[in-house]
Structures are given as C-alpha cells and as structure tokens.
Amino acid sequence: MPEARETAPTRSALMDLRRERGFVAEGRELLDQKRLLVAGEALRCLSELEAERTRLFDRDRAARDALADAVGQHGIEELSVRPLAASRWQIAVVERRFLGIPLVRVELSVSDGPAPEITNPSPEATRCRDRYRELLVVAARVGALERSIDVLRAEYRRTHRRVRALDNVVLPELDHAIRAVEDQLDAQDREEMLRARMARSAGS
Image (tube, rainbow, N blue to C red):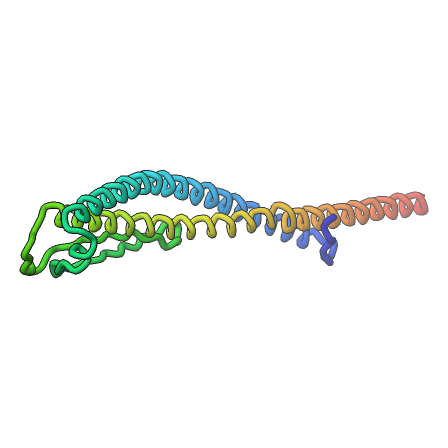
C-alpha cells in the first residue's frame, strides 16, 4: 500500500495534489507514447536488419565461392602473395536522431588506385577481390543497424521502467494522498456542521 504523504488537510493543498497528479498523468501518457514509438522504430530497424543479414549471407557465400575458384586457379600460396591494388576505402557515418536517440548508418565505398604489375592475372582473382569488398560493404551496414537496435532496446527498457514506476509508485501515492486529504476535509466539514447544529440548539 502506498505511503501517505504528510500533507496539510486544506483546500489549497488538495488542489495542488490534484494538479500534480494531472501533470504526472500527462507525463505518463507522453512516456507511454514514446515507448510505443521507440518499439515501432526498433521493429522497423529489425526488419531492415533481417534484409541486410540475408544480403550478407548471400555475399558471404559468393565470396567463399570466388575464393575457392581463385585458390583452384592459383593455389593458396600464390594467391596469398599476389600484390593488391591500392584500394581507397571511404567510410561515411551518418548520424540521425529519433526522439533524441542517436542512431547511425554506415556506408563503405572503395575505389582502386594504380593497378599493380601482376605476372599472372586472372578473372578468378579479380572476382574474389570484388566479392570480399562487397561483403565488407554489407557487413558495415549490418554492424551499424545492430548498434542502433541496441540503443533503441536500451531506451525502450528505460522508458518502460519509468512508466511502470509512475503506474506502480508515483500515481498510487498521489491518489492515496488525495483520498487522505479529502477524507480529512470531509471529517472537518462534518465537525463544523455538528458544531453549528449544537450552537443552534443551545441558542434556541
């Protein structure tokens, strides 16, 4: 049972308590709406993540197949010492805010520098390189989405705890305090009415 507040049983105190309860109830509704919006955004990100994970699985399989072809063409030793093109990787981290919650999106892009001198070029080795580049690009998006979902999950839990605290502690305490003041005021009114009757009876 909620603990009673030490509140003077006056009309102004009762009005203050009712006003406070109204503010708390309004805040509770706003928090509950935020909780639903955060859950909706998390579900949207989860759906996007599932699509990206499917794409990542496909890229991983393509990269493994290309690696197998390249190894079959060159052998693991020759392939491991082949000179690489001077790749220029660019990473773009775009931050956006959802209800003040920082979320990120990461995009990787790559371009080639001067081509190295290769004595035994082959489409298998080039395809292997390209497939692993594509795999990294998708993996970066997956990592950013997973991070955003973690942030949304933590915010949902915080908001949920606040809503439960208002429902289970703050609002019941206010309701109990309001009822206690109302009961005391009713008792005072009855006492006043009783004294008034007794005064009229004594004067008659």
